[in-house]
Length: 492
Image 1 (cartoon, one colour):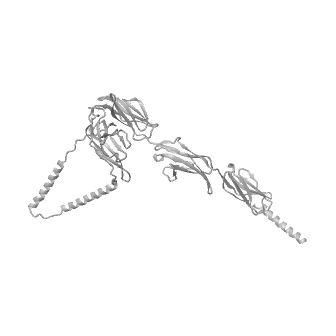
Image 2 (image 1 turned 120 degrees about the horizontal axis):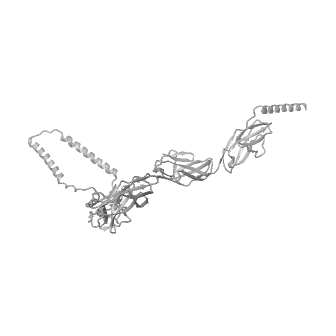
Image 3 (image 1 turned 30 degrees about the vertical axis):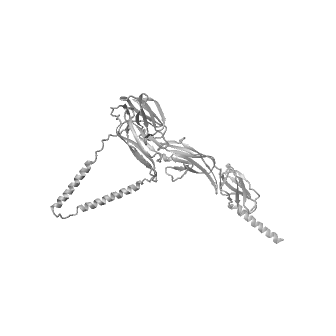
């Protein structure tokens, strides 16, 4: 009995010494474990452990906002203590385990919980809005969501992903920036916002936002043709800019005053002005206007007459020039026929196919350059044959027609030799000429003994005969017909 009391006393002393040692010295630090990310409305579990402190212990889960949560179940000695948490948008923050024992408190390091809100409602905000800029001007696109957190962003231009290595793009966070826009930056842009937890992810893609990159307008050019209408003549005045982005507003000026007709739309506009043949009707000028530009053409005198230096009557001869148009694999696909004339300022063109007049519109042909060019959009048995053109003065219905000879247009079904083949063949031919010429040169300078004077006379006679033959050949060629400059329309 006495021995048992002594043993119990010694155990109590050891426990007391151990408790004093634990509570009197630096207390051990508890450890917290749990997820660092969790989706909204999911349930997560935190575990707290502490070794080296005897019970009884009080466990709490503390959030940085001061919120205190109690353990999920009754803590068991030597086992981790668990805390369950239903994740809400306010659950994001830092969490600590706090343990109380013997009047002392110890706290674990912090564990940060990120709350992933599933992404939805992605949309793009452009700057400027709408995203319409001129070449050389920048724009910015921002990707926004109605809901979502901890997002990563992907950008697409015309369904192609824009990467950080893409030229002239600046990607930062949820923005895409272009400092100097060009034609290549025009198109539709989309943004995809994504958040991911392990292998699970949510994403949302915006609607496409159009970006328009406009070209600066080039100075307009003015020209006119003549046509007979009713009992008089009219000038069909063309105002055209070679480069720019519609809409363009064109205004015709006559002697500095606005003609009361204004046209807005594409890069070319037409105006009809009554004229009297043989009279100076004034000076024409075009004015082209966009939202940021105002340009004028060079002035052009509206003067038409048979004896006017600007009005050369149609004359000389007419002929048709044919160019075959081929595809990338050298197959003839179409033909371009141009009616050329020796001279004439205001020509009127008419085309014939197998001596029958061609209508102004057709399924397989079209006219350009006021009828001077005929395009055959497809060559087949139905439109293969002889084509010719007729030309006269547009402002004189009594003038005679110049008619060209017919040219045969047909599709033989054979491939045209590629340009590379023609170039190689020409180089080979040129090489043969150079080598042959070099051989003749060295053969000619080789010294040979002269046997007698007759041979000398024979050689001189041959040389003289060759020279006379050359002169005869050159002079026998018919002289070229004198050709004036062909002016198809008055234009500046």
